[in-house]
Amino acid sequence: MIFTTNKNVLRAIGTIWDGDGESFIRAFQPIENSYDDITIELHTSGGSVFDGNLIFNAINNSKKNIEIHIIGIAASMGAVISQSTRKVYMVENGFMMIHAPSGYTYGT
Image 1 (cartoon, rainbow, N blue to C red):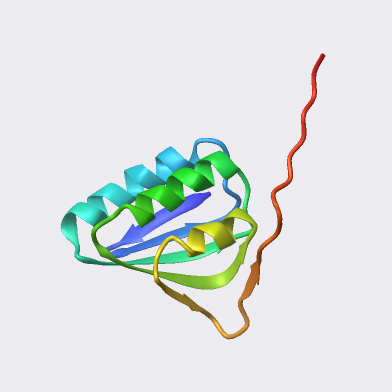
Image 2 (spheres, rainbow, N blue to C red; image 1 turned 135 degrees about the vertical axis):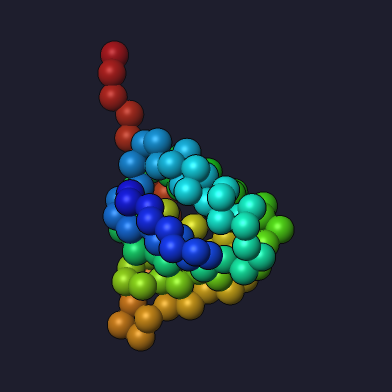
């Protein structure tokens, strides 16, 4: 996932890969320390549940006024992240997809 910031706006775009939860927190903390109102612009097809859960918790546990703007899609774990705050907006042609969890195992 690619994270960019501009003042009180954090843009999160792309697949949520392993390690992106920590990267989100590194991008989010300076904004959280500087602004009371924060906007997160989200566009993701989902990805790592574990890292997405870390992102969800960082947003959900913040005491700041956070809005999530879905600027394209919020699918799978992205849809879960979008529910981490009460203020969620989506572009008119946006897409949200929620599904039951899936997983796999391998090895001996």
